Amino acid sequence: MKIRTLPLSVAGFLLATGSCFAAGALSVEREVTVDNSPATVWKLVGPFNSLDVWHPAVVKSELNGNGTQVGARRLLTLDDGATRLEKLLSYSAAQRSYSYSILESALPVANYKATLTLTPAEGGRTLMKWSSTFDANGVSDEQATAIIGGIHDAGLAKVVANFKQP
Image (cartoon, rainbow, N blue to C red; front, side):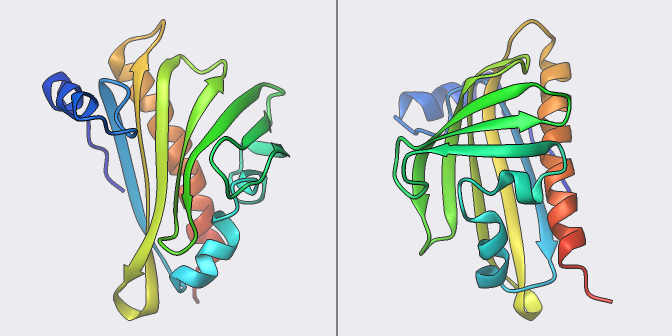
């Protein structure tokens, strides 16, 4: 897995160009290779309301709206009892990708937007990317980046474990 933090000038340029994926000055990107086809992995991670199935910190996900249409919201309940409200920004089953933002959360970040994307990898496997942009809110940039990176790492590790071939 890798982490990439964009300098403020790059993030500012992306925001200025109107990209809906670059709201914050900080950026985390993680990627893993999953031992199954993109079509199969998408069945697990593709539904906007399935985070409670594949992320170990999410115990419940409640959907308000159509999970494939922009504007749908999911209310996540975490293993510590905290909740997080997220909004679907884009969704493409054909491209196996969706983007969302956090509307309400106890996380120490603001302007959070993320994208999850699956693409074919060598040997019939899947490259799964989870990237996000955000601003630190009440903590240092390094702390915010570490927290978001940890969230991504935990979810991606669980997906890899679900499809691990012997």
